Image 1: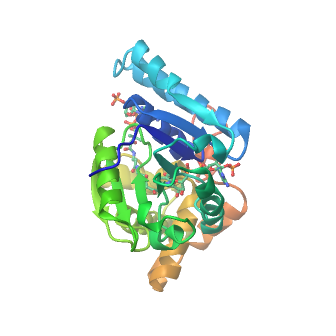
Image 2: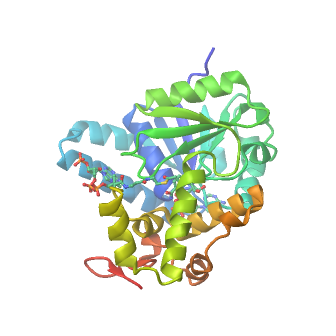
Length: 293
Ligand SMILES: CC(=O)CC(=O)SCCNC(=O)CCNC(=O)[C@H](O)C(C)(C)COP(=O)(O)OP(=O)(O)OC[C@H]1O[C@@H](n2cnc3c(N)ncnc32)[C@H](O)[C@@H]1OP(=O)(O)O
Ligand SMILES: NC(=O)C1=CN([C@@H]2O[C@H](COP(=O)(O)OP(=O)(O)OC[C@H]3O[C@@H](n4cnc5c(N)ncnc54)[C@H](OP(=O)(O)O)[C@@H]3O)[C@@H](O)[C@H]2O)C=CC1
């Protein structure tokens, strides 16, 4: 029997957390949105308002549907506010220490039978599960960015994940109108195992002077029909997240082909994280993005 999921808690109100909150509310679920700072929750709610407005202006949903979805999302100022959630999805920064700390403090506030999930892009589900009090009720639910648009969700079981947890997560994704695929618990799972080395290679291509930002992105958009160039996509994902995923691949698979490009490291060290900080491979501070190299 699957666990009925009616109320979802989300930790981390950044681009992924806000997108997950939006699609859950649009599917009729109650949502509690948490972040470590109240102003981050407010910013996440602002992102949801803009995204819902975009869908209304396109005629994808009507005003009343948008309003009722928005009303289902409430801020959660602390983990105690997540106590009545059936499922809590962690979507905080891609850093294992940050996530472990969240799980070790979160569980005491939850119902004993609540399912706990992570939206990690790369980190071992089995290792994160070990930071909880319920590895059998823990699972990777990996949404793609932008969440309101992308159809796929990867499900990743840890070594202890029970069948009931997996089946419940699968039913939850179907309720959101999305398609789930299963990946084994290997570094970066399936999508990012393939996508991130391609992005890293694009950054090496820039680093070695093979092409400019513009020529690399144009080449892959028009030459391989990718909807975004790889450097544009890296800025969209967040360069901090890209670097963390490459580091997990490099450490976890111990193969030099996953070595993060030194230019990626430098951009992250400079705090140029892409769109979210308004500068990455493009500068977003003006009306149109301008390549930085
Ligand atoms: C890092 C990880 O762990 C895993 C990952 O997620 S990796 C990243 C995976 N994502 C990708 O690869 C995305 C690649 N890019 C794309 O698919 C497209 O560029 C895109 C869908 C993001 C935007 O498409 P576009 O055609 O350039 O822009 P745009 O016309 O504005 O948007 C397309 C549609 O999406 C909608 N849309 C885009 N962003 C939206 C948002 N945040 N909220 C609501 N709707 C949105 C638009 O309204 C538009 O809808 P219609 O087709 O009905 O008009
Ligand atoms: N970006 C992408 O394309 C995708 C990302 N993911 C994964 O989703 C997760 C979130 O990524 P994304 O939304 O892009 O990142 P963002 O940087 O946009 O958002 C992360 C949010 O988590 C907050 N946060 C950090 N520490 C804590 C904490 N201890 N408790 C609560 N909130 C915290 C951050 O606050 P502050 O800024 O103050 O630190 C920030 O608001 C990551 O694991 C990432 O790998 C998965 C699929 C796609």
